[in-house]
Length: 263
Image (cartoon, rainbow, N blue to C red; front, side, top):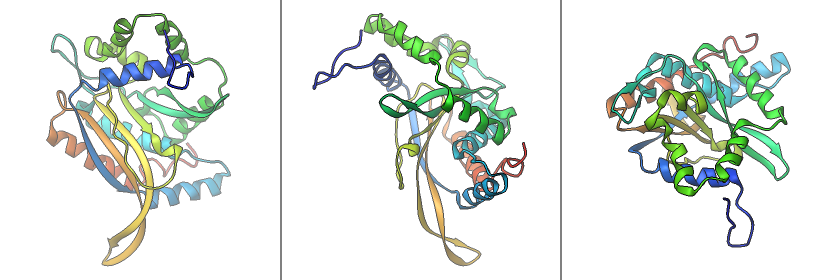
């Protein structure tokens, strides 16, 4: 069951699940890459789209679209190895993303799976994220947290071994890759490093301004801090490097934004 902190405040079931998740994910062979990506053009394009349509466009939806398209091109980065050593590779890219919602205690990020994100437009992903933000019904993960609360700790933590035991069931429950937008809770540059149960996780940090040489001239540009985490037991260094490079190219080329105003 849930416990209490040093000041006597009760730990919620969802917080306890997070603690369990971190303990189990920390046992994986995670490798983290800290990169910066120039998002000046993408942010300007999103601003133009918002002016033309009169509606906001989620930057997270844009990043999710870029990740899904890159994974679709290089599906080996969402492979999973089960307890028998068999490799599972999926065609659809289901992205687990943090969506910010209002609660009684303020705004928090909750997990939501964008299904078949590799087959979706930026506008479609944006619309789904906005619907989840506005949804006031009880989320499935909240019900899971309530059930898990009654389990002993040793059993409760086994929930997070599902990717290694039954990868297909894990994908159905929590998606095949993850995008965690810690940058939504603050401003400025900075990276976050976190254990993960996914073969691939992208942690979106802050955005800062710095000079970049373009056509022989130094120009002020906006750079996004990204942490790309791989399970090294499944993904080797060279493929991981190629994925990060291709992802950066997609973000900097404003992938998917050419149709975001209409589709």
